[in-house]
Image (cartoon, rainbow, N blue to C red; front, side):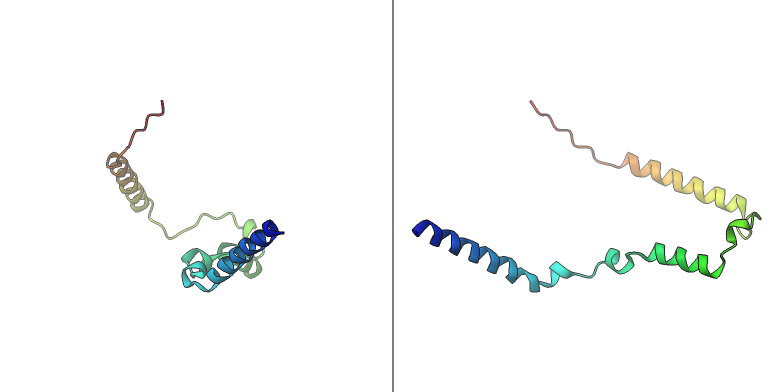
Length: 95
């Protein structure tokens, strides 16, 4: 009888603690991911509704300067290489 009373009190305390954490603002924080969840799907759906025959248009996309894009990609790749060089690596040993 005493063991069941203790278990009931422990369970009730646990339920109250978990329920008490519901109102903490950080637990339900509105993050960038939450605000944008599903946006890519919705954008694709609306674009297909606006132009359902877009897949039949095989013309190249115009408006981007090829040389400028190439320069930007090279700058991006060089930045990635520099970033990799600056990474601190910590070794661990499990023996």
